[in-house]
Length: 398
Image 1 (cartoon, rainbow, N blue to C red):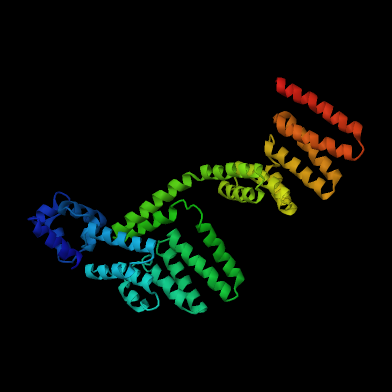
Image 2 (image 1 turned 30 degrees about the vertical axis):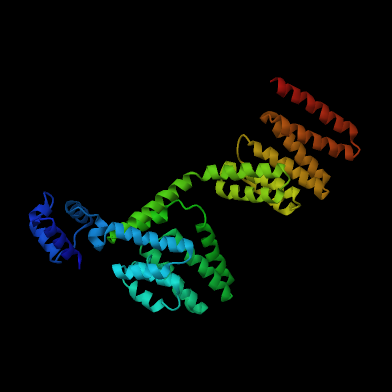
């Protein structure tokens, strides 16, 4: 039954005339043209007619009860969670005439044996709904043909306005694997980078664009799902700074407990979430300290160079520059470059004075004093510590 016939039968079942259904927004002639199939109703007209007929827009378009469709979707999702039950879902979908759900269930049941039937069932579906078929076809194909299928699916999704992050992630991840099989490491790296980006916390833009495309193609039920995904993604994105702070706080606890490897992992994740923000650079200094303590001098030095380069033009210089200078001094001590170490430590102390972090200042004064003592420069060491203690006393009183 097509849309026009469905509207006609629902109207008669409710005892409405064409003029009744048209209300004050449309004409009886317009309703007649829709029912006869001569015209396709606009999205606004569909919503209006659905409301007058007492059904959802999706039910009007597809002819299926919203409750039945939801129950079928729940059964399929439960089968995914439990890893079994797909045969029952496929049989139920066949009884209800739900080709898409039957195809998806068959592909989960045995993708190789059901490729042909799934292809027929999904014919005419938008590219997003054909994704399980494409992935199954690519998995069964030799690498070069698999790459062709995956690239074509990726380009179609994007060109037709369906940049769904989950679908794009699946395509890029599989492309990376197949490129590697072909020995094309450069393209594998590009696909892998994009796949890893999509594993992060999406801001929901892809889901939102997908929802708009689905609505434009009169698939309101699927659009509602995409909009729900978009809302959830936007909410998650808004919590990214809080999530980054959680990783950072746990890293401090792990660092103080001596679990440096775990602390480094948490700080790396926090830095990734913070991005290029000021707090992200603060976190980079903390990560550099942990890397130094782990013996990864080159990684620590690279982080410190980045922080100092990004912060060098700021006025006044932020506190992280002093921390970075102190860490650079400690790295130089460990590498045996005492002259470079002294230069960094004195620079850190000069920065700490006006900024006032007493604990950090005291730690850096102690390190510089020990360095000078180790060189037999006892008088200079005593002077540094004496002046430092006096300044610290002034800070405490102030």
